[in-house]
Image 1 (tube, rainbow, N blue to C red):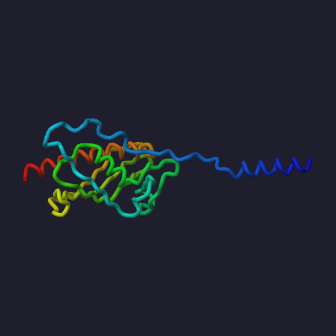
Image 2 (cartoon, rainbow, N blue to C red):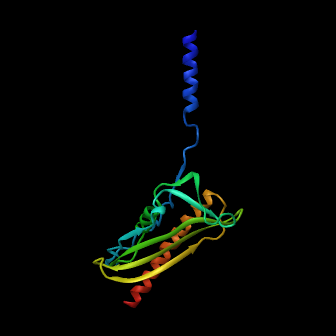
Length: 186
């Protein structure tokens, strides 16, 4: 009988030590641009995209900041994460759609976080600069900075994910527009 009590106690201890918490949900920006590039010689090549970011943006945590309470403190959602670090997600997202040919892009990601101006009042912010390099990758053709801010989003991880998915597409569209402007000047 004593043997069974010991086995029972050991089983309870093992169950108590096992992780019963939820596994974090993994997110990305969605499927990306769905329209394939138009056929033709002017669309035969697309830009190579490279994304560079500070070390603190090189993990998969979804960041937020309470501007009304300790605005210098960066916080993270525990039960929601990116499937890959934001620089990787942006590179993949930009590479999945048609971008201008004959040059490559280097994106310098500076800011990528959800911010709360007050409880229940949140938005997402993405700040980056883009360098357009000649086809050989050596000559810098132009540089431009972009600061994108979403409208009001739900004040939670789902709001952050949805806001960043929308900003990723807006960023891609704005970079594409900038490339068209450069092509007119050349």
